[in-house]
Image (cartoon, helix red, strand yellow):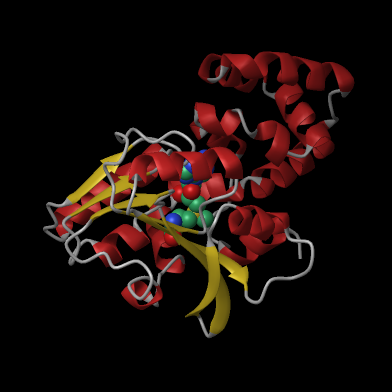
Length: 266
Ligand SMILES: C[S@@+](CC[C@H](N)C(=O)[O-])C[C@H]1O[C@@H](n2cnc3c(N)ncnc32)[C@H](O)[C@@H]1O
């Protein structure tokens, strides 16, 4: 099944509309060349010129790509436009879910193994923990009751608000939410003791692993819960990169399935 198909199955209540595209953030507009189907995006931009102007204001470097895309593709006729809108919206449906339905996303992202998937290789008790690519903070909230402090790094503003509200509701005053990326965290060198990711690494793997090493410093432990199947299949460049950089590989169980995790002490 395609990624868009999986999203449609998981979030039937989403009913995405073209207006949702106005919610995209600069860092997401920057990733449209990798994520959006080309012709569909071009047809949508022809049909909604305000959207083009909005994207360019939010992420100026995308102007050249978006203009060239529109020059390469004709505008669509009415029915075609509607089909292209839907195809595009579902292809980036996760971004729309983050903005519009963070509570539902949180329910469906439930991190059922919690600390049992973490502490045997990355003890977090009394430590300064970073949850990078935190989403709604599933990992941050698992760690917070026993950690000294948790820094939840997340680029999507609606998700950062969700974590802040939830921490307040739960009376947790050791969860600190910040804007950032795995390859660029607003955290000083060596300030973290344990860095965790769950299904949130690999957009730019080498740069991310460099940044993880920077924020941890000597003695720090990184653990990446990938959500990928265990054991590893042949010719897996993600796996080879992590192993070449000194990570160990193992499994954890989630939803009755064995998944892959990587960890390393620096
Ligand atoms: C699949 S979700 C996982 C969220 C969370 N870790 C969880 O377990 O539910 C991936 C998260 O990474 C965030 N993200 C996307 N690009 C990122 C990047 N370059 N650096 C850090 N986080 C990123 C997304 O906004 C999203 O919240």
